[in-house]
Image (cartoon, rainbow, N blue to C red; front, side):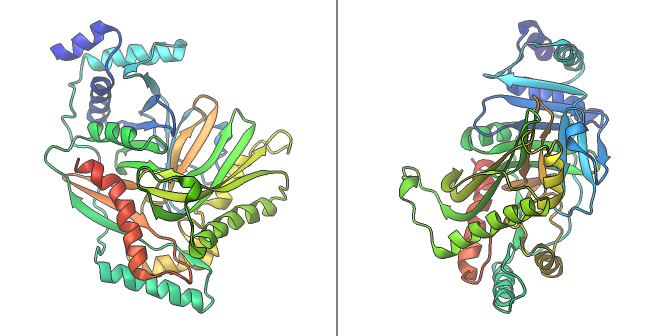
Length: 400
């Protein structure tokens, strides 16, 4: 406890020490928390929520109080919302000075929490028993081959079969340290660490924006698909994409445009596709933007979220047929993998990302998730290799 008091006396608690104090306090009191860093941003944000709740299916995000949303892949299941009962921002390794009365109240709460909590979690993070699944290479390749056959038979145009991999965590594993390493390793991704009682604890590094609303004015979404390994020094201007990868990305773009048409939205800006780096891989990315005031569509974020989740980038196309195939053949519950998460109305912005490159912490183990876009041109062995590359996004950090 002497060390915690010492931190208070400095007036600017160090990042790692403050995270330890706050997360320990949340765990001891069965509070939820969300720790995240936005892409290409140095600020780390932490919400501690003691009023976490599930959202109604038709909840309007634009009307919610500031908080963090954590939603599963299956849109028929509950979405979890963590109101920002207490919120902190960290810059350059220290807790930011209070900017207003609400921030000052959070700082006072921190001082009280620090006087009662240790620096390291004395209680395990929340976890629950997940469904059993196969990690066998042959099983996954057979799943891909079955998908290719059904595409050739005309059942759908694309399918995104996924798999999970259970790994033992090293004895030296430290969740806060791992979060920090992910921030350092993947500057272009949303780095997240979320824990909710009776739901579980998840960590990830997602490159894919689902929807964004800035200042109640500008709506954005992206089509992100096609995958190649990235080697340091690669000039992305000269990357050559195969027809299979170009078509895979085009399917996602067409999916977004088709949903604009459903709501009779014709005024949007389209930029791309272009090659982008996402950790140890590259993707093709097209960005779409809409001025919500000019189009008189103040709830566009909520409307598009209902329409485009799950996207064809994580499910397939057409949606209903590909969902039915995955439910019948994938062999496990994705839970929050390929769902979405992110801050809502924090700094006047909604930023929700597809929960990719993620893992679920389960006591002394972690469950990692990855999928691959399958088209008529897919080769099962190559799709297995793609999932291995994606799993290594987190695996190499865990084992570093």
